[in-house]
Length: 271
Image (cartoon, rainbow, N blue to C red; front, side, top):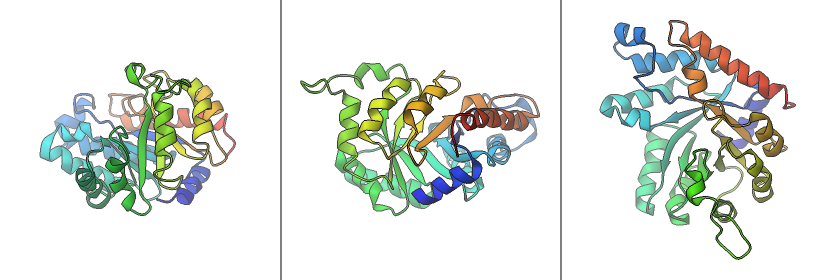
């Protein structure tokens, strides 16, 4: 999906919502396990159908599928195939390695699975990321400032005499590898104040924002500090939407939660 298409989808749906399909078989409704041969895929299909009208993106955390072995990989591919064409597909795989390995990762997720984007850890440097840029109309989403508490361990460390933080150095350097048409960043909603300084470094890039919902990120402040002229934000919610109910109406409950978050965004953002 191109940047132009993504922006058009945002305007059409009047939404910045990204729904995270972090599907844990131990958390889905019990009736699915009892009544369906493939309860995870059934769960995902219903969530996708229920939320696709307000979701501009789906983020699939691959660990939840890889942990299930062969069945999980098949469900990952089948889930991607179930997502409508007008929705941006993110493989949340957090890959990157030496060049020839990254080339195989890119082939797996961009060719075999047809994801629009993949999350990538930039800390091995440019040659570990370059193979992902070889694909036209595909996106690399680089980890910059993550939403977890452990982000404080390293990402704020000063790296020069001017007090530049490590995550700021990552942004400044990596923004030269690609461009606004193929590169996004992950910045957690648990760091809403930092969006101001981040926008000074990457004013025009899209930012994927986890940490809204279960992790307690500040949506209003993220939007205030992070929006740009092309909206520039994808607001992710996973557990807060997909596990809204464990009853037979789980998909309806998910739809309501997705709409609730979308309406909060609409109350602030002018589409």
